Length: 200
Image (tube, rainbow, N blue to C red; front, top):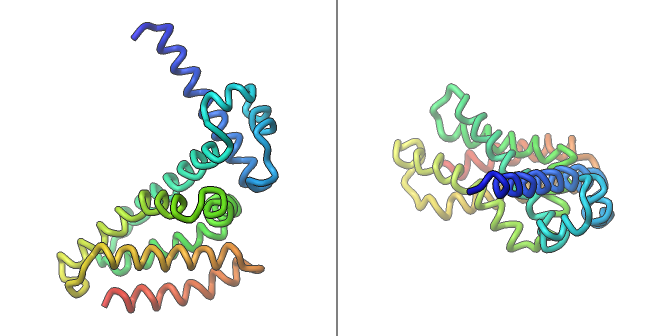
């Protein structure tokens, strides 16, 4: 590849990063519905034409932002679990659930992932992206738990889906509550009991 073509590719990648960064900040602060593409392009320092060259429409730009936030959340979660001294899969899953509930009180995660995500992307696409980033981690911990006898033998894949579904609903409850901090405390007790009951 020639230097000129590499430079063009670099410029395109930089434009995309600028658009995702600008859109992420605006979507988190004002919500998807109140942010237009012209405002995003201006914040990114590019033209609307450049925006539409990178993304088919505002929904696809939002999807890129959503995936970036999801990816960062799962990386942080995986790092947390890897740093824990315990080898008990139940404690790992409980810590992961607690971290996910903590994230659900953060304004950016609330707005982009939990509130706007399902309505902008549609339930199926929202769920598919969430599972793509989180299901592998949960399944891995559960498979290890079954293999080591930490929990009784049972089908891992349906258990992982059930647990992910419960945690997503728990986070949605917190995000939509009038008092997310109080809701997070209450839901923490529920999730603790639920995970311990599931993993017997």
